[in-house]
Image (cartoon, rainbow, N blue to C red; front, side):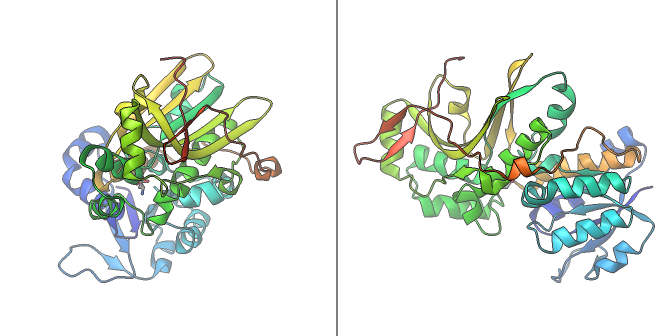
Amino acid sequence: MSKIAVLGFGVVGSGVVEILGKHAGCIRLRQGDIPEVKYILDIRDFVGVNGNFIKEFSLIENDDEVSIVAETIGGIGAAYEFTKRAILSGKHVVTPNKELVAVHGAELLRLAKENGVKYLFEASVGGGIPIVRPMLRCLSANRITEISGIMNGTCNYILTRMENDSLGFDQALLEAQQKGYAEADPAADIEGKDTCRKICILASIALGKHVYPQNVQVTGIAGITLEVIKEARKKGYAVKLLGRVSCAESAVQASVEPYLVPRSHPFYMVSDVFNAVMVTGSATGEVMFFGRGAGKLPTASAVVADILECCEGDLPEENLFWTDSEGGRQPFGVPISVNKYTFDSGFELPILQTDQF
Ligand code: HSE
């Protein structure tokens, strides 16, 4: 039986433990055995919660029985250090940590390859939506030419509540926090940084080269008022925060910004915490992935799927790899050119093209 350690007992970490317990029946049917949570690492004390809680990472690092580490701490401080130490001590690491993957993905994938272990992060983009593995495996016969999507559940929840229920921005954000959708610091959601990290991960997969967040031009949703949303609606648009990358051979262009999405576009109907990612392949054309993009159990579901993949065998995931590159560090965040709509107030938003729909 594989033994795992869960780092961080927050929203997603506790969801991982919950799913491994509650879904044991269906996991056993498919896998034959259920990974056992040997340790839960957290600096906080949890009263009345069962589990082998520890505060010292070295216990995990030095325990040869633990073969898989689920890093659900988030951020790039302790999470980065523990991920490297886990990989160096021969353990597979799985994570929903988009910030760490977007900033240090090339290095950690290289380190995992050198140490013969897996570094998997299906949950880092789109929460419970399968996107990383389908891009790598099911679309592997394609050159990916464009990726665009609604990739932040918190922002989409806020915009939907404002549009449908005329809720104020702050109240809608509070609800998103209470539902466990927002980041520890929700500025990362609202300012578009979270979407930026996710589009960088998908772009790195598509290009095979690390695409760094600092090179992407990012605008968040702080400027979106109820008046903007109402005027947009009258004109037949929904306001959505989109991450986009266009992977033409000559140049890569990436951006994160709020768009006016016309009724004819599939993104128009994507509301609440739902995310949608549209990937354009050279053979498939547009393929859309849709589902809950944030929240405890959807995100934990993808983390547990990665844990189960690690249980299946020790062969590293050869396809899941991209190189670091100086090219990736060059600014290339030229906004994808689009038509703009000017609101009565003078505020402007780009309009998403819908030629193909
Ligand atoms: N804060 C993120 C979101 C969590 O709202 O989408 C999932 O990555």
